[in-house]
Length: 66
Image (cartoon, rainbow, N blue to C red; front, side, top):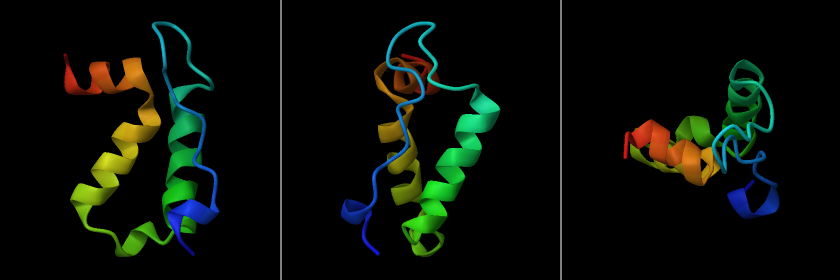
């Protein structure tokens, strides 16, 4: 299965205070997504960038402390 054939989870945080679901629940959704797309075979760097992509605009800024 490729990443193009499966919808990614909703962005975690696109704007300040706009969480789609609580972090604990979102992280489990993301983990399930990674496994479903064959991510267990991905390099750590690729998983990192998939995570950044799915965090959303503000979530990415918080994560990278911009």
